[in-house]
Length: 79
Length: 220
Ligand SMILES: [Zn+2]
Image 1 (cartoon, rainbow over the protein chains, first blue to last red):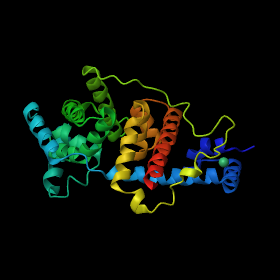
Image 2: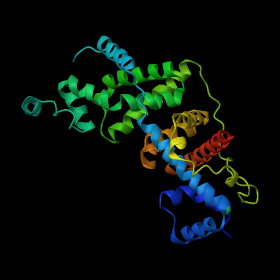
Image 3: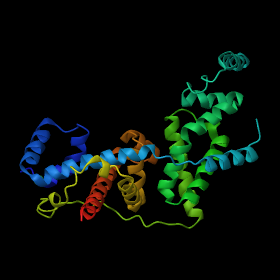
């Protein structure tokens, strides 16, 4: 029988559309009947949206970039 | 060889305008730098990858001054080793791998060891395989975007990623933050694709729980 555990352990395949048809059907049937799993799938998807936003976070400040420039200039002899 | 060099040189002179370098692929930039010492090509590589390399080093070391040390080391290594890049993997993968190695080497030299606990037994269901009462009570999926994507929520997820054991953290960062493919992550970290998937899976379960706790607390 398809359990909550099976939803959890197949969630990556579900998100990536990699499940075989049988597993996909069972997962969707279980999730349709089980509000816990529905909440699990929905929060899981929302989480991926949030982590996707971290990509654009600027890391390198002009100061960091400048220190790198100075370092490279001092250490690297032109060929 | 002489004519190849001349051709490249002429090609650069002829096409030299603001666009010529930004249109090049990473691999073309590497060639320009290693074969004729084109400094602009190297600058463009730095421009393309500075953020990614610093961000990844910061993710591994979890400390901004350590990350900057690694960041500088990576680009120094690059000036020395760029001509050893053979194109067997993507240039970006090669660069990420240099970053991983430089980070580990740096942490070792600073004697900053991290106990690498396993998350293999981390799952939200009970011994009977059910989620009963574990998820729905803290369901935050229909919260408005303004809360879900707030700076505070982004900070929480960022902090939570840093709580992951190192081997999960690196996989998660490359896969879900940088958006690389499983195959690329496996190549960079020199682990198998099933290992990438397994670590990513546990990392996501852990982070989903953290976010649930956060949004649940927030409601009060
Ligand atoms: Zn269920």
